[in-house]
Amino acid sequence: MKIAPSILSADFANLQRDVQLVENAGADLLHVDIMDGHFVPNLSFGPGIVSALRPITNLPLDVHLMVSDPEFWIPLFAQAGADTLLVHVEATPHIMRAIQQMHAHGVKAGVVLNPGTPLSALEELLPMLDQVLIMTVNPGFGGQQFLPAMADKVARLAKAREALGLHFAIEVDGGINAKTGKIVLDAGADIAVAGSYVYNGDPATQLATLQALR
Ligand code: DX5
Ligand code: ZN
Image (cartoon, rainbow, N blue to C red):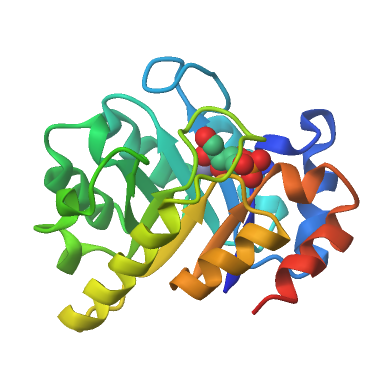
């Protein structure tokens, strides 16, 4: 399982240092949480942060768009240097168009499901996708509790992927620590995002406990 530290819990006044700490400790991806104060009740970063990060790290930038009207933002974040864009199915009535748009802009296409959104929302989309992100908390804030019922959702998605012969990556986000990390790994997750667990402590030590799971 790959580990994607979320910089939402980093020290924003020392962002470069905090990115390099996890890169040097062997992180696989860098997760960047974009919040617009509308789709979720919080504000975080814009495309300027992604373009500032691009030259200071070799880690792939995994950009989670918790925004309304994602079609407006996709070109801007692709141009800023995102490697993967992750769009919520709840954020647009035209999710398939958003996926086509991500591919047209040369980035990997991911979709995200809130905890209350059933897997059936993905049924027509799965063959087009590079990544599926299953939220394991309700999005908007770091430091929330993992929702145990989401483990079964991950397991059902992994089973569907196998039955369909598809190869998209399954990612989880929210409340991941050494204990819940083991649960999602066993359920079939390929990528685990971790914010507060990595940054509320020594990032290299914390990351090592997640890397030890795989
Ligand atoms: C939540 C964000 C997460 C957040 C995870 O809305 O999408 O990526 O940073 O934080 P933790 O790992 O603290 O739950
Ligand atoms: Zn996220």
